[in-house]
Length: 208
Image (cartoon, rainbow, N blue to C red):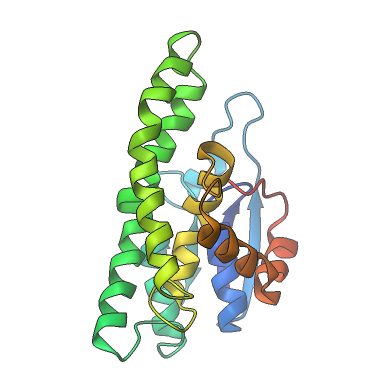
């Protein structure tokens, strides 16, 4: 049964399209454009899910929201491909980064984005906030210095989850400055055929 992806341009849902391409699962994209004045999602998304957010998928009578939950759903649907590795330490890293992406790394980046839109005091607050972000980016750099992918030697869905916050960090927080392993990881990700196919399917994406 085809998976319907309710996809908002320039958003976290780009990761869902990428994972679907990596897994080779059939899907249909329903695109939504942001309000040009507010950059918020359009009200039409509330007809799909009460929160009016993206990504949301529909499949076999199920409506699934939240990127992490969707990723776990799709991995399960694909019989565990790109899911938790068999090695215990790799499995622990997989679970960690699957949740770290949105639970720890993304909140300070989002806060910085909000501050960037605050006149006058926003710029001052951003400078004070940057050290908090640097702690995370230095941690990520160290992890990628130790192994090629986030969970271990193989590409997994944890890498898919980490893509959006790191792309956001490049544009908002100088993530690759002095961090060659983050830069190399992003370059590898962007070179993957499935990633490129997802960009073509999803439409406008400003790399967060």
